[in-house]
Image (cartoon, rainbow, N blue to C red; front, side):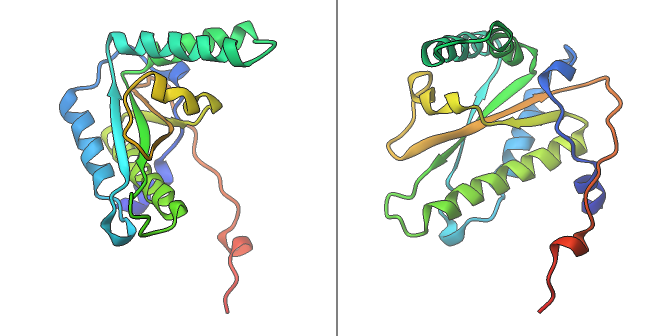
Length: 183
Protein backbone atom coordinates (compact mmCIF):
# COMPACT_ATOMS: atom_id res chain seq x y z
CA UNK A 1 0.00 0.00 0.00
CA UNK A 2 1.27 3.48 -0.87
CA UNK A 3 0.92 4.77 2.70
CA UNK A 4 3.39 2.12 3.90
CA UNK A 5 5.91 3.17 1.24
CA UNK A 6 5.46 6.84 2.19
CA UNK A 7 6.23 6.04 5.83
CA UNK A 8 9.21 3.86 4.85
CA UNK A 9 10.88 6.54 2.66
CA UNK A 10 14.19 7.80 4.04
CA UNK A 11 17.13 9.92 2.97
CA UNK A 12 19.93 7.49 2.25
CA UNK A 13 23.19 9.37 1.76
CA UNK A 14 26.08 8.53 -0.59
CA UNK A 15 28.31 7.49 2.33
CA UNK A 16 25.81 4.66 2.96
CA UNK A 17 25.85 3.26 -0.60
CA UNK A 18 27.51 0.00 -1.55
CA UNK A 19 29.03 -0.82 -4.95
CA UNK A 20 26.03 -2.70 -6.37
CA UNK A 21 25.16 -1.18 -9.76
CA UNK A 22 21.64 0.00 -10.54
CA UNK A 23 20.16 -1.53 -13.70
CA UNK A 24 19.24 0.97 -16.40
CA UNK A 25 15.70 -0.45 -16.51
CA UNK A 26 15.22 0.48 -12.85
CA UNK A 27 16.53 4.01 -13.41
CA UNK A 28 14.12 4.33 -16.33
CA UNK A 29 11.27 3.14 -14.08
CA UNK A 30 12.21 5.79 -11.50
CA UNK A 31 12.26 8.46 -14.22
CA UNK A 32 8.89 7.29 -15.54
CA UNK A 33 7.43 7.61 -12.04
CA UNK A 34 8.71 11.18 -11.93
CA UNK A 35 7.11 11.86 -15.28
CA UNK A 36 3.68 11.06 -13.82
CA UNK A 37 3.74 13.95 -11.35
CA UNK A 38 0.89 16.44 -11.60
CA UNK A 39 1.47 19.86 -13.11
CA UNK A 40 -0.90 22.77 -13.51
CA UNK A 41 -1.87 23.27 -17.17
CA UNK A 42 0.21 20.18 -17.96
CA UNK A 43 3.43 22.16 -18.32
CA UNK A 44 5.42 19.07 -17.19
CA UNK A 45 8.40 21.27 -16.22
CA UNK A 46 10.69 18.54 -14.84
CA UNK A 47 13.85 17.71 -16.76
CA UNK A 48 16.21 14.92 -15.80
CA UNK A 49 19.90 14.47 -16.61
CA UNK A 50 21.22 11.02 -15.65
CA UNK A 51 24.84 10.95 -14.52
CA UNK A 52 26.62 7.60 -14.37
CA UNK A 53 30.01 6.04 -15.00
CA UNK A 54 32.98 8.35 -15.48
CA UNK A 55 30.73 11.40 -15.58
CA UNK A 56 30.23 11.00 -11.81
CA UNK A 57 33.96 11.66 -11.24
CA UNK A 58 33.80 14.65 -13.61
CA UNK A 59 30.83 16.01 -11.66
CA UNK A 60 32.69 15.62 -8.37
CA UNK A 61 35.74 17.42 -9.73
CA UNK A 62 33.57 20.19 -11.21
CA UNK A 63 31.71 20.75 -7.93
CA UNK A 64 34.89 20.77 -5.85
CA UNK A 65 36.61 23.27 -8.18
CA UNK A 66 33.54 25.55 -8.16
CA UNK A 67 33.46 25.34 -4.37
CA UNK A 68 37.14 26.34 -4.11
CA UNK A 69 36.62 29.19 -6.60
CA UNK A 70 33.64 30.59 -4.71
CA UNK A 71 34.54 30.07 -1.05
CA UNK A 72 37.33 32.33 0.27
CA UNK A 73 38.18 29.72 2.93
CA UNK A 74 37.37 26.30 1.46
CA UNK A 75 37.38 23.41 3.91
CA UNK A 76 39.32 20.31 2.85
CA UNK A 77 36.68 17.88 4.18
CA UNK A 78 34.04 19.57 2.00
CA UNK A 79 36.30 19.46 -1.07
CA UNK A 80 36.76 15.72 -0.52
CA UNK A 81 33.04 15.17 0.06
CA UNK A 82 32.18 16.99 -3.18
CA UNK A 83 34.68 14.83 -5.06
CA UNK A 84 33.73 11.52 -3.45
CA UNK A 85 29.94 11.63 -3.07
CA UNK A 86 29.14 11.42 -6.79
CA UNK A 87 31.47 8.45 -7.20
CA UNK A 88 29.73 6.54 -4.39
CA UNK A 89 26.34 6.78 -6.12
CA UNK A 90 25.07 4.16 -8.54
CA UNK A 91 23.44 7.03 -10.42
CA UNK A 92 22.78 10.72 -9.94
CA UNK A 93 19.86 12.45 -11.57
CA UNK A 94 20.20 16.19 -11.96
CA UNK A 95 16.75 17.59 -11.17
CA UNK A 96 16.05 20.50 -13.48
CA UNK A 97 13.00 22.62 -14.12
CA UNK A 98 12.08 24.10 -17.50
CA UNK A 99 10.10 27.28 -17.06
CA UNK A 100 7.05 27.50 -19.31
CA UNK A 101 8.05 30.16 -21.88
CA UNK A 102 4.46 31.45 -21.87
CA UNK A 103 4.54 31.75 -18.06
CA UNK A 104 1.04 30.28 -18.04
CA UNK A 105 1.43 29.41 -14.35
CA UNK A 106 3.45 31.03 -11.55
CA UNK A 107 7.05 29.80 -11.33
CA UNK A 108 6.50 28.38 -7.83
CA UNK A 109 3.91 25.98 -9.28
CA UNK A 110 6.47 24.57 -11.70
CA UNK A 111 9.04 24.23 -8.93
CA UNK A 112 6.37 22.46 -6.85
CA UNK A 113 5.49 20.16 -9.77
CA UNK A 114 9.17 19.26 -10.15
CA UNK A 115 9.35 18.54 -6.42
CA UNK A 116 6.33 16.25 -6.79
CA UNK A 117 8.18 14.45 -9.59
CA UNK A 118 11.07 13.91 -7.18
CA UNK A 119 8.69 12.59 -4.51
CA UNK A 120 7.33 10.06 -7.04
CA UNK A 121 10.91 9.05 -7.86
CA UNK A 122 11.83 8.77 -4.19
CA UNK A 123 8.83 6.59 -3.39
CA UNK A 124 9.61 4.39 -6.39
CA UNK A 125 13.21 4.01 -5.20
CA UNK A 126 11.90 3.05 -1.77
CA UNK A 127 9.63 0.44 -3.32
CA UNK A 128 12.55 -0.92 -5.40
CA UNK A 129 14.92 -1.09 -2.42
CA UNK A 130 17.18 1.67 -3.77
CA UNK A 131 18.44 4.30 -1.35
CA UNK A 132 18.09 7.90 -2.48
CA UNK A 133 18.68 11.46 -1.38
CA UNK A 134 17.90 14.90 -2.83
CA UNK A 135 20.83 17.29 -2.43
CA UNK A 136 20.50 20.95 -3.33
CA UNK A 137 23.90 22.56 -2.82
CA UNK A 138 24.40 26.24 -3.59
CA UNK A 139 26.72 25.16 -6.39
CA UNK A 140 23.77 24.06 -8.54
CA UNK A 141 23.62 27.60 -9.91
CA UNK A 142 26.77 26.74 -11.89
CA UNK A 143 25.44 23.57 -13.51
CA UNK A 144 24.90 25.30 -16.85
CA UNK A 145 28.70 25.19 -17.12
CA UNK A 146 28.70 21.40 -16.67
CA UNK A 147 25.84 20.29 -18.91
CA UNK A 148 23.64 21.94 -21.51
CA UNK A 149 20.44 23.55 -20.35
CA UNK A 150 17.73 25.16 -22.42
CA UNK A 151 16.80 28.81 -22.04
CA UNK A 152 14.62 29.11 -18.94
CA UNK A 153 15.88 25.83 -17.45
CA UNK A 154 17.36 25.76 -13.96
CA UNK A 155 18.90 23.00 -11.87
CA UNK A 156 17.19 22.41 -8.52
CA UNK A 157 19.52 19.73 -7.20
CA UNK A 158 20.82 16.19 -7.46
CA UNK A 159 18.92 13.01 -6.75
CA UNK A 160 21.55 10.53 -5.57
CA UNK A 161 20.71 6.83 -5.87
CA UNK A 162 22.45 3.74 -4.54
CA UNK A 163 21.92 0.44 -2.79
CA UNK A 164 22.78 0.23 0.89
CA UNK A 165 23.50 -2.56 3.33
CA UNK A 166 22.54 -0.31 6.27
CA UNK A 167 19.50 -1.01 8.41
CA UNK A 168 17.41 2.15 8.02
CA UNK A 169 15.89 3.69 11.13
CA UNK A 170 12.15 4.14 11.54
CA UNK A 171 11.03 7.66 10.78
CA UNK A 172 9.60 10.07 13.28
CA UNK A 173 7.14 12.88 12.78
CA UNK A 174 5.33 15.18 15.12
CA UNK A 175 1.59 14.73 15.46
CA UNK A 176 -0.38 15.87 12.42
CA UNK A 177 -2.94 17.34 14.83
CA UNK A 178 -0.31 19.91 15.84
CA UNK A 179 -0.04 21.02 12.21
CA UNK A 180 -3.72 21.00 11.30
CA UNK A 181 -6.48 23.52 11.76
CA UNK A 182 -10.02 22.41 11.00
CA UNK A 183 -12.27 25.27 9.85
